[in-house]
Amino acid sequence: MTIEVPHQPLPIDQSDVRYVHGPDSTVEPGVPVGETIEFEWNDSVIYPGTSRKFWVHVPARYGPSRPASLMVFQDGWWYLDPVGEIRGAIVLDNLVHRGHIRVTIGVFVDPGVLPGPVHRHHRGAEYDAFDHRYVSFLLSEIIPEVTKRYSIAEDPDRRVLGNLSSSAQLSGGNRYPDLIPAVPP
Image 1 (cartoon, rainbow, N blue to C red):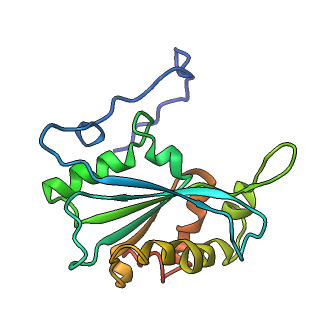
Image 2: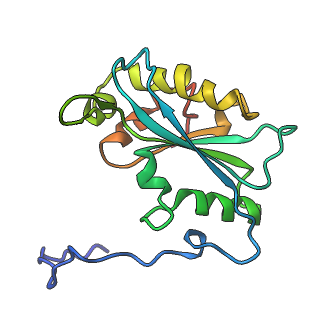
């Protein structure tokens, strides 16, 4: 049986509402902390003239003899910030330590910025375009920089793209099977 409820606006202003973080989002005693390394990327062929930062988080349990899974996060710092909303590196460390996921290296990629008197963010051109450029950028520029340093599984079922908002369009419809594995409905 379905019960229909009429729409009512919320009785309070939620602009200052924050959700409580779960246990995976806080540093837990006894969980080894991985290493996060910051990189600058200023030599893009696909997005010439842009500069950006990206960070690679390597869980403490990583060893080069066993290729790690890979998770790429767009809007990198927003996902990585240890006091922010997502806290991606902390979550990866906790999940890997507990054995809930395989050893997974996180790559946190910020959108590009174009130089000038006022830096112009290139986010819309990268995330909102319905073409192959962004995934080509990841596959031919960023991920090879990571695989120069770390052993990453080639199996597409061990690679994932994490995102929200307009950047979530990239994973919709599995248009990029080399980066994002097909998920059964």
